[in-house]
Amino acid sequence: MPAGLPCRRRREEVADVYNTPLLDLVYTAASVHRMYNDPAMVQRCTLLSIKTGGCPENCGYCSQSSSWSKETGTKAEKLMGLEEVYEAALRAKASGSTRFCMGAAWRGPSQVGKGQWERVLEMVGRIRGLGMEVCTTLGMLTPEQAAQLRQAGLTAYNHNLDTSPEYYGKVTTSRKYEDRLATLENVRQAGISVCAGGIIGLGEGQLDRVGLLHQLATLAAHPESVPINALVAVKGTPMQDNEAPSGLDVARCVATARIIMPRTVVRLSAGRLNFSFADQALCFMAGANSIFDGDKLLTTPNNDRNEDLAMFELLGLKSRPAFIDYPSGNDSSKEFGGQAAAPAAAQHGGGCGGKRAHVEA
Image (cartoon, rainbow, N blue to C red; front, top):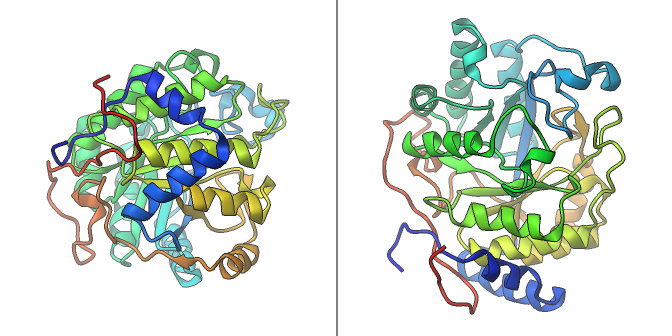
């Protein structure tokens, strides 16, 4: 397969991979993982909510939606100041994080004023100047906004698809799946690396998990990063009573993602708090090579940093430095001496791993 093109699999083929007996699936995924990655190297990332609450979207899992703010008690806050965010990034770097992610509870930058948007762009540039990778999740982007983020020095843009196209209407009705895909394409065209994944535990079925992974694997280029999140059910949201997925459920999704997107960074993201070291070890064996570091993820709790350090020591893991070999990313995932670079059109999509044939979707 020519370099730069993603693996094209039919959804049935992805289902075939996903439904492989778990131990065989993890074994295959681990073999693929070792073809493209150092299996001991796991990136530690920090996530900060720079603007909490008041989001006009009605995502059923999210505590920051204004639709259920009375039930969740989440108040709309102002955008954090530049120096406050920069100090948080300094602390994250000192603790060993090499990627700093910032999230704002917006439908998109178009809903805020010029001053707030320019402050976010300045945050990106200042933190990139620290030698850290910088990722943001700010809602839906126009092509112009994506280009401005690229010029500011953004490494990657996170915009999760959440679930399959068929199930998406059960998650939110305030936007369409096509809106998500359009933002991902705007990001890709601007030369920013795409970070897109989903959430397990939204009430979806197994076929929806397959549908999500198939959608990600058949984008124009494989995402640089695919976060696999386990739902953290928040009291007051419509999904407050959803049963949390098990560590084995997440390991199955991680392994499938690794096989069908072998060069992508698979990020073991929200929901680790409920997983044992053994659960997480299976995910790392299956191909996960990133975690969120620190005791909070936007508005929900995360694993204690000292516990993570103990897990790294127990499992023989080492921290992944910033900017090393993102073969599925745009040039924004490469270091430019800490300076912003002009947009790049080149894509570095991955090929396929595993035994199954490559079939056009």
